[in-house]
Length: 526
Image (cartoon, rainbow, N blue to C red; front, side, top):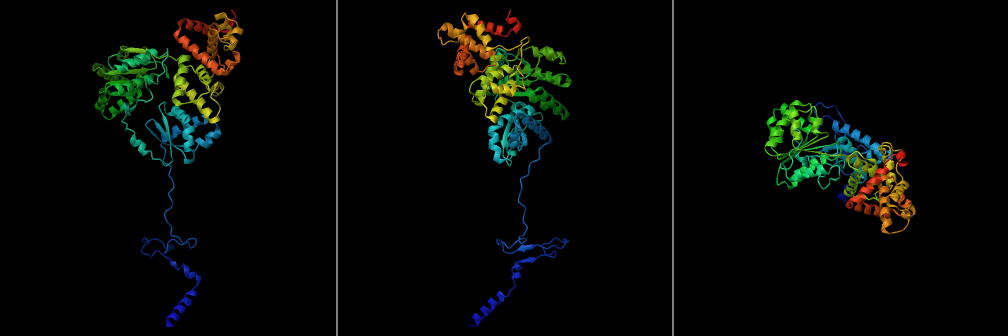
C-alpha cells in the first residue's frame, strides 16, 4: 500500500508541474560555458538534448547551411569570346528560341579545340540534339574553324577532360595538331584542285622523295589546310612510324620568340628539326620577321639536307611575297608549286552532297543544294557555312529543306551573284528554245510523252540545263516539261550527267548551250 501511495503521489506531483517545464530540455548557455571562446560576448542559444522531436521554432541547434552550387569563374578571355559567340547566336536564331534554349548556357572552359558549355539539366539534351550544329558554327567563327562544342551538365568536371588532353608546350603540341576529319577520303576533287590533290597524295605516299618541298597556294577556304593535314594523317597511318610535326607560321614565330627569351633555343631546334615530315601553314606570316626568317631558313636547310619532307601553304605565289628574303623564296620555288582555284559548280555541288551524307541530313530533293551552289561561288568554307545555316533554320522552323528555304535564309547574307552584262537570268523557256534549235526538234515534241531516243536525249539535256542554269526548283521544272514530277527530273539530270562524263561530243554541245545561255540579253537577239 505504501508503495502504491508513493507512486500515486509521484503521479500527482508530475501532474502539478507547470506546462513550461517541458522547455527544460533546452537550457541557456552563456559565454561562461567551457565551449565558449575566451573573451566572447555573452550570448544565448538553445541546445536540444533529444534530437528528432519537433518542439517549435528556435528549438533546433543551428547546423551548417546547405551547399549551393558555385558557378566556376570564367577566364576573362573566354568571357569575351563567349560574348561574341552569344551575339552570333542571337543573329542565327529567333529571339524566342535564343531566350528559351540558348540564353541559359554558360561557358566552362576551352580544352584543346573543344569549347565546353554547361547547360541546365532540363534543357541539356534538347540543346545538344537540336542546336549543336548552330553552336559549333557560331563558336567556329570566333574561336577558329577547328572548334568543337561539348554540352555538359552544370556540375560536370572539366578537370578530367583537361587531364585527358595532352599537355601543350610553350607553343602548343604541334604533333597533336592534326585535324582527324581532314583526310584524303573527305577531300572533294574537282578541276580546280585536281593537280594539288594529286601532288599532296604523292608526297604522302613517298615523303621526301616525290616533291620536296611541296608549296600549295590559293585564296582562303579552298582546301590548302585540308590537304596539309591529310598528308600528316596519311603518313601517321601508313608511314611506318615516321615522325610528323604540323604547325603554323604564327606558332613557329611565337615558339621561337619564347625560346629566345627563356634561352631554350636548343630545345626549339630539336623540336622542329628532329622530324621526318614538317607541315607549315600560312607561311606568308613569316614576312618582315627578320630573326624568325633566319631561323626558319636554317631549319629548312637542316631538314632538306637529311631528306625530310617539307609541305608549305600560302595564300599567294612565292614570287608575290616581296617582303620575304630572296633565299627563302628560292627554296620555296625549288620544289613543286601547286595552285588551288575556286571550285566550279559541279565541285561545289559535290562538296554539299558529301557534307549532307557525312552529317546524315535528310533532304526531300537536291533543290536546296543547287540553290546554295549557285549562290556561293567563293570557296568551300563559305559553302558549308551556308548549308549549316539553312539546316539550322530548318531545325528551328520545321520547314522542308528546299530551294525556297535556301533562298530565303541566304538572301540577305549572300546575294545571288550576277554575271557581268546579264540583265536577267535564263528562263526555262529560253533553255527549251535553245535545246530545240540545237537538236532540231519542236517544242511540242520536247514536252510530249514520246520515248524515242531522238526525243529523250534532248529532253534530258534540257532538264539538265534548266536545273544547272536556272533558279527553278525540280517541281517547277517538271511542270514546265509537260507536268512531270520532280523524280523524273532528277532521273533525267542524272542520266544526262552520266552521258556527259563519258561522251566528249555531248559534253562540247552542252557547254556551247551553256555559253549561249550565259550571254547578255542584248546578244541573244542578234
